[in-house]
Length: 114
Image: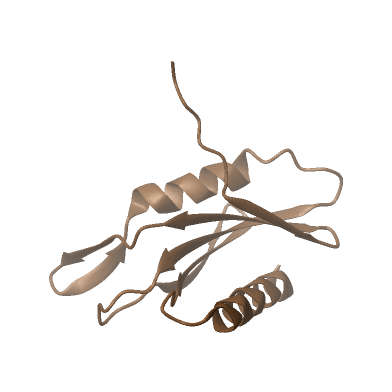
């Protein structure tokens, strides 16, 4: 039996919808530079691309990684086939209020750019 994973969370504001997916930090080093793992980026894009859009709804996606001790952390914004996709990190060693504030800020910034 095939199992299909769905987007982790959904946030809706006005006519915009943000789908999120949380992943383990996955950075590949090639020639000393960090690169996003394309499987994870493709996965969030697939969620966005297959979302059942209603009316004038704008749909985008956010891929969140737990912050690690690595020097380079994900902080990227893409426009893929007209949809905004953000790849960000979240410091889980913070207290709950700080994590909540970061998530709120990420969400507010995301919707401003849609």
